Length: 103
Image 1 (tube, helix red, strand yellow):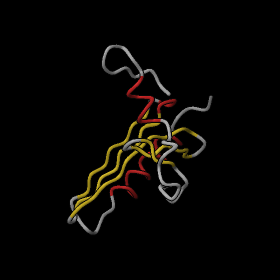
Image 2 (cartoon, rainbow, N blue to C red):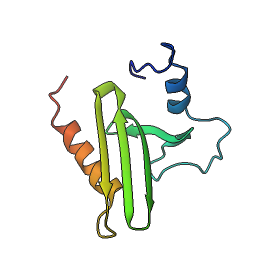
Image 3 (cartoon, helix red, strand yellow):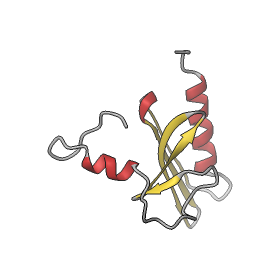
Image 4 (cartoon, rainbow, N blue to C red):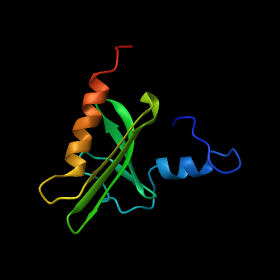
């Protein structure tokens, strides 16, 4: 999944964090069916592989999405209970994907 390399030129860490964990609790999925992979969720959006993570605490929310095949990444942070980083970041990602030239 992509050409990222960490450590000594090995893809082991990337592979571990982008491969669904067979030992994860089966209910560990996002609403759109993405599966847990050691800190990230792995799935598809608009037919493209995506790796991501969301978080939040006390009025703060965050989103990280990476589309390795498209070389697109989106990071969103919201410091308000009136805005959702996962919702806004997903909108940005879908807009970026739709703006790509057709293959």
